[in-house]
Image (cartoon, rainbow, N blue to C red; front, side, top):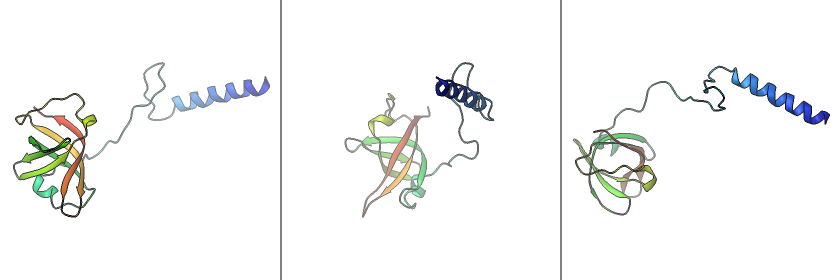
Length: 127
């Protein structure tokens, strides 16, 4: 019984200290923290520049998907050219687009022997 009381007291004290810590801004009665990075975001990349980047480089592209090439493979176009973009179904998040829909795609360059594409991690409609 003594160990149980000590455990309850320690848990209560640690929760109270945590709730008073800097950066804790959870709504009343909820035990989660909001937060994230505050600073410069990744800058916009053109397709032409993306084609020159190393494998796994992060890119942010704005333009349109012009056509579907395969199951999750699409041709993406901006003013500087076209590039293949792989978009897993989970990243569509219920959004429907057409070739007229302007998009912002964030992802990583994926280079193989003679193949280059963007592995999308985020797809957002701009218009």
